[in-house]
Image (cartoon, rainbow, N blue to C red; front, side, top):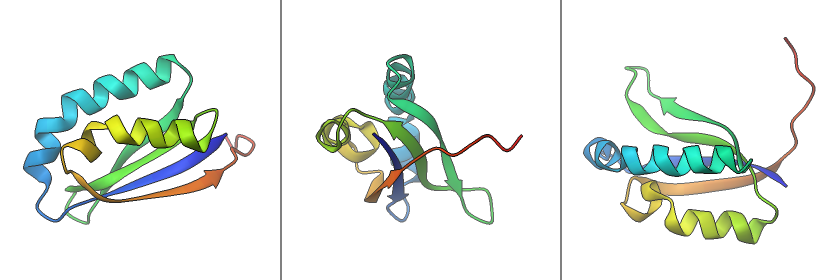
Length: 95
């Protein structure tokens, strides 16, 4: 079951983001190898500053996604202020 996850950073969270980034990327790499993370990246402001994250996930259930959020470093370490989760279905390739 695919979802779009939008994590919006707390204002002035850039130092927390830097501190949590290595663990966030390591967990993301693990999820990619398990087929649970399809795609992800940073949401940027006009000045190029990171303001949040966008991920497309592929967990077996919403409960499994919620369990991941409980250990996600950007949640645990107070980088993301809000997290939006929406069901999603990948469409055809437009390349």
